[in-house]
Amino acid sequence: MSSGAAQCQSTLATAKSVAQRLQSRYFNPGNGKYTGGSLWTDAVFLSHLRNLRSNLTNPWQNTLEDLHNLMLATGADEFSTVADTSFIGRAALDANTNWQNILAGSNDDAGWIVLTLWKIANYKGSRGLSTMAYLASQARLHQTTIDLRCQFQNSAKKIYDIIAGQWDSTCGGGVWWSTAHTYKNAVTNELFLLLSASGFLRFGDQAYLDNAQKTWNWLLNSGMRNAQGLWNDGLDSATCRNNGQTTWTYNQGVIASGLAALAVANKDPSLLNQAEITLDATIARITTNNILRESCDNAASGGPVCNQDQQIFKGIWTKHLQYYLDTASDPACTAKCSPFLGSQTSAVFHYGTNANNDIGSVWYAPNQARPISFLVVPNFLITSHLSGGIGLYPENERQWLGCPYRSGQS
Image (cartoon, rainbow, N blue to C red; front, side, top):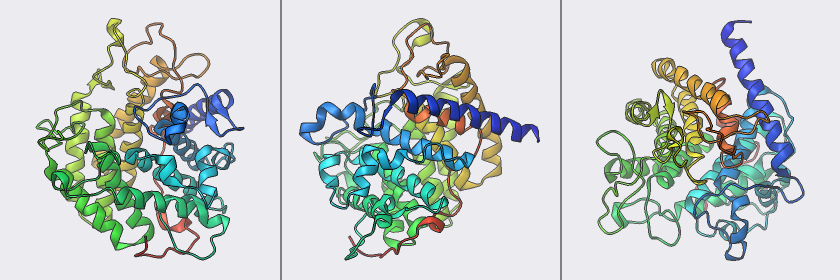
């Protein structure tokens, strides 16, 4: 075995051990939720479910996505029952689920859930299992009879349609952050770009590609990318100009994976240059000693660390950088970025992991004897290790669909 293959296997083994800790310590199969709770600020659900948001928010969906990334990478099936027993999986399997109620107006949460359902469907399809209920939670296929295999697919498409319906002409276009229509921000629209370009690659429906192209055109002209090449949080609602708010790491990662998917979809490699402007800026400007560090994190000097909303952003960045590399197939960027991903893996292992395999949010400095806060970072608990070892994005999205897709319907 080559040294590279040995390192890959070692990385996967570490990721698997962390995932085992996650499931044994924090997952409640009775209600399909993770206990101990990660918060995602203002992750909105049914008003009478707001007290449950620590168990139903974005980090949770990212955890499910990462578990299935892990199984796709290793070929193992240790966590194969998690999808169907999770809250989101149960909702996808129920043809009567009201996704509008579950989402309660949160369009960015909706985007994360679509990514999760797609990943579950990839896994199930690769094992010859039912896929369609997950993929279908993105849109309505208008089938008179929808079997269990098609309910996953129906769910994802329903959710995608909800997001698409939130586009309007305010500030020249873009999807609203929530149905309250108070804010247009970077990550919600970056997610819509990624979903739309990836949806075209999955289904071949021109409507997806049209949405992806108009979203990128709007983002490019929105002013949210600053002179440093980084994306600020969003637009000032009064002026429709860059609000100058924090350049969170995840804003810089999701745009890259979205642009890679669009570059493949419309055969435009110049989009990769646009993505790498931001990737290079992230590595140069949002790091300390070559390790990702959010601006809110002052752990090394004994100051405060990022809150529970912000602690997961770095993991999302590493995951979407890996998606970018897998999709773009750019040897130069792979050669440049792979060592950086490896450094993040090493930092998480040496600085952010305790003896119980619980993961903390500080990567760039020792934990400073602070309590490890495991579920505040579920989306990098696996990905921080897995991204350093193997590609995560399926080469052929369409091969695992297994259910007829009807274009032009909503």
